[in-house]
Length: 195
Image (cartoon, rainbow, N blue to C red; front, side, top):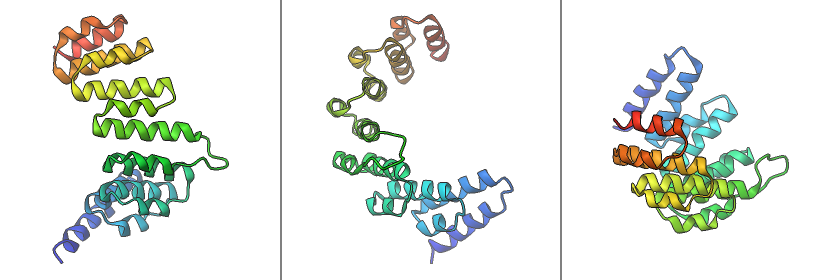
């Protein structure tokens, strides 16, 4: 009974929020924190409901919840969220291309690989990514997480390299790393951010 009372109190607190978007965000936050799908089921908007399912699926690390999602793109996103939460690369193989779905299957899988690589801080996973932009983005995030600017050297595109140095500088709180940045605007922003 102890779990029911706090959940009811939180739901009542969400219900009194006048702004619909904020109210829905509140319900999703409570559903995720409590790992309670019943709260998601009460949401009216299908998009919001499926977003809620995805968040609860990741919080519970329960792939079966993704099957409640009708939209193929959001279902694929749910698979990626659970794969990241479980740090389980094999889940990325569940991502499928569906008729009428705008994102190609490889883009969805690349996103999933990036999420797992970041969660595990494992650069070797980036080798599975086919899109160079996606690889560069993942190197950037792993470099920042590991606070290792040498990883930035694996990046192909200069804007990503500069942003990589900026993120590592912020993570290490080291403005000297900003000197490696070529783009003057990014360099100035990096230096200001780390003073």
